[in-house]
Image 1 (tube, rainbow, N blue to C red):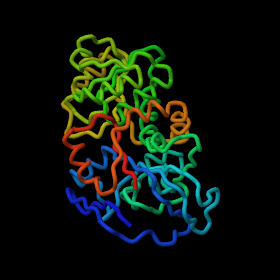
Image 2 (image 1 turned 45 degrees about the horizontal axis):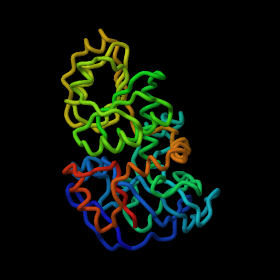
Image 3 (image 1 turned 90 degrees about the vertical axis):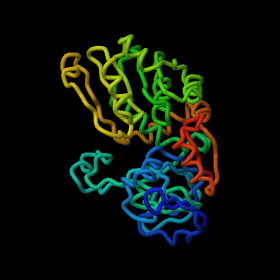
Image 4 (image 1 turned 60 degrees about the vertical axis):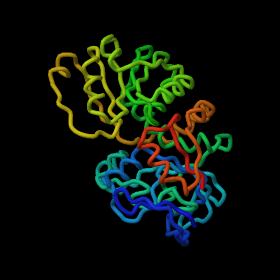
Length: 330
């Protein structure tokens, strides 16, 4: 079968590899129907930060149909349409025993610990699979995992009803956070990004307003913000412009360190909230997408074949995307 494999930092190859063998006990073989390219996939390609096995098939945002069940698997049958939980947790550490699988002491991710979705077929633990409703189109269902990440960030932020929310970064998570906020009734959503085409797409789908971080800082009327750029400069700008008594949810993958004056946090009572992946939001993300499927689909960038993945990585690195999500369609 055809697959994309990451061999080392900067070394991504389209290759013909064997299809998965019969699944191990507790595992399930899938025919992949769609897989989204995540910013963390591109980050790992550029830095090699999370390469724990080589070569590996990336792609942790995937949906597919069950083809074969391993011994002991219950609750699934061949033909079931499913979305994968991206988190590969141990189930034994204190965090896992408390239900915080996203904080597992040995946490890994699909596409790293095991092969992911940039292939025609893959094999995953049955515990990671959630059934999809028949009325949720593939083009929306493939966004379930990043919507869960966005939903987790919004829940961690806990913005007050009616309060303005500023989102720095209109990439997949920032844009989908705007979608989540709009779906929950927030009307004063402000988005800032250098990619004007992405901003326009997000504003059209969510009713958000395009702003600049400089203008937002000057207004100083925002108490709730989401940092989804991974830029320490953007975070510094958010901090400078935050009104008192607010919070910033950090969901971007940061590059570099922040030169922080803690007195800003003390004197204005501003909270910095870390947001890692998601906790138990995946079923809620599925339910939310069934309500806003059309809006979610309008935020997609383009569909590509497996052979086009390396070129898509370079296009995304260059910032040449109009929508939020490039989807691989095996």
